[in-house]
Length: 175
Image (cartoon, rainbow, N blue to C red; front, side, top):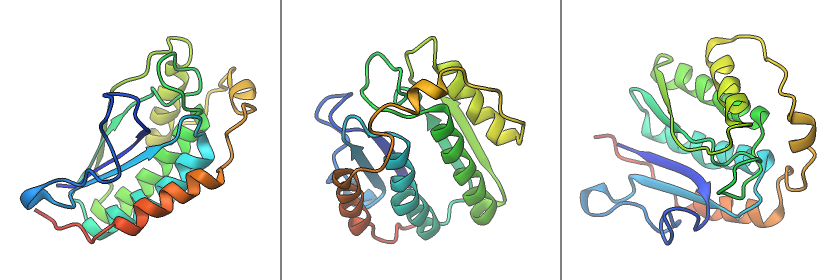
């Protein structure tokens, strides 16, 4: 088994999800944590996806991709401090679909977990469902605002962290 987590550094639970937490014993190397700095937006998440998630999945060769799709990284979440937009979620989902088609016959399953903005979670979740089903995009009325927030572009400190995580990737061992 391989687990990959893109999340806000030191948000919840506190003192967990560090880059160095890679699994232990026979599971050493089976966990990949990308603790992104607070304020990371679409650019940082998509960079992490391309540089860490995709190579790790390709090296592992999954039979199915299971995703705990948390929307607490959204730009309007009251608890976390990330800047993802509905388009960021849509883009990551499209990338996952492409990887699933390439690696495991398109087998992908997603479950909603996390996300506490009753105003914005529906638009982020809808973007994921639209991407999964190849449905046309419904207009996100918040997108013009949240996509304009500072932090949407990849920042140098985010790229540095992603490079550190990518350098730790060992070819994961299939079960």
